Length: 252
Image (cartoon, rainbow, N blue to C red; front, side):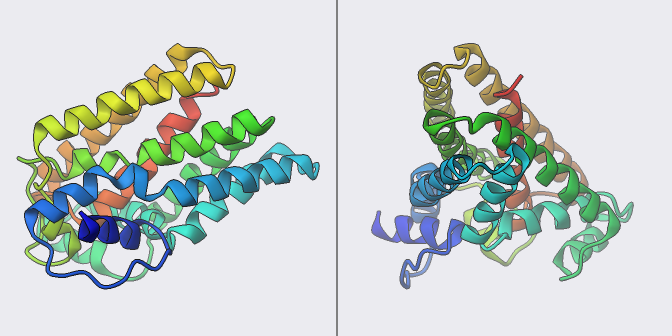
């Protein structure tokens, strides 16, 4: 379990986690399942950052950008990079092999840039709208944690890896389906309760969870059909898509 925690923290945050042994399937599964807990320090930090920005009198959009920027810094922007690479790969119009080559390159194409602008813009606007006080800021922190449950879906058994190497291949297909279902049931309950406690409609939390799970499932389906499976980039994209869906649905 310690190796799983180190893997999850070291992959999802900039917090030093120390070296780990070889990643076996059980360690990989545990790391993906506890991902929402592994980012708890980051979630608390950006929630407080947003709250302090609000207290300082920053406009809502500035508060939102501050939080989104803090998330990018705290995760090395790996998830945003994964989103851009995945969009470039899926939009390339080439076969699976060449699409994976596009995703592996370090540069970002125009489709990836547009995806980043849209996603970051939606996140910043929604976060700025939610952070009206401490309760709203903490709700944002809860959404940050819950959105990382997207890894349970991208790594569920039956979903293959698109490559034979890389971290994505080490964790792909490692999470038992029952564990993934249990994880998302917990997310549903937490999001519903958090929405209620923060003064929002409980249904908003439930709808946010369903929307995030549905969009991540569509992404996985598309990547399996188009690329032959998932990669580390797809996993990062799934996190960004889940977070965007959850945070936007909370303000509707």
